[in-house]
Image 1 (spheres, rainbow, N blue to C red):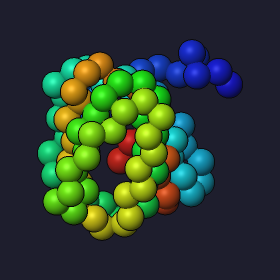
Image 2: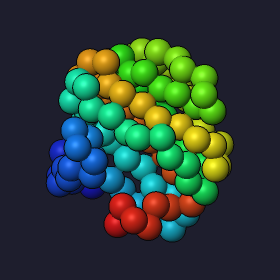
Image 3: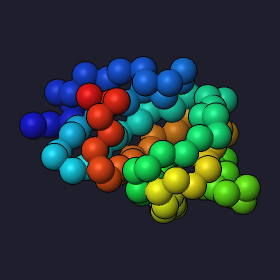
Image 4: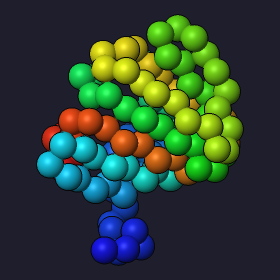
Length: 103
């Protein structure tokens, strides 16, 4: 399989994902347009996010940080978080367990 062969889907407004699922993990490659937001939420999945390219404002448990190319964020299970793309971005997320709602 090659990433170029996976269809991109708009999962949230401005968040276009190419998503791969294993039995216990989901791997998401995102193309995010500047200004796109993810409202505050939490989920039981543990999440690792990598900013491949761009600038991304991320809030975790009320702590706001500006993430830039190369940054990695760990989001523990059930922690409130939200975000806004300060530029066009490319992000990569890994979730465990797998995100059934993304299948």
